[in-house]
Image (cartoon, rainbow, N blue to C red):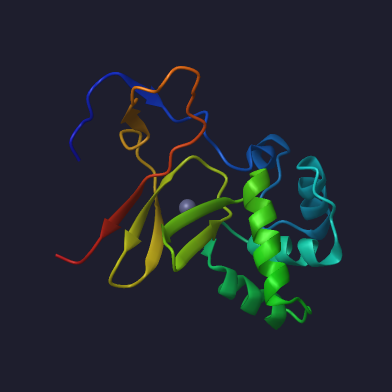
Length: 161
Ligand SMILES: [Zn+2]
């Protein structure tokens, strides 16, 4: 990877679900952890939201809404597709999970709260984490007055050689 030119800034301050680390909650999250986490984000912990979050926060993972729907249903819960989509939209908007957009058809929800970037394998459709200090350092674009950066997502799209 080529080094990027200065000026650079570290993305350390950009994290998702920083409350999880701050509250010292670790994977897999139990029901009471999930409830505390949702309450921290001022999200009312309804039964379905708790069931969805419990499934998502078993481990750091990247899941599509369809996979979440399958997982929650297979765990014996009754939840509609619309509820899963609405809930994931809410969790993303509040910063509980990170939404990783590959294209219009592919959106992953990432439960990993650590600062990291992604590799998306176009052959396999798999999304994996990359931890690299150089990747976390990017050239700061010139911004119009009055604007500030609140987030940066880097997804490297890769294929087999
Ligand atoms: Zn990730």
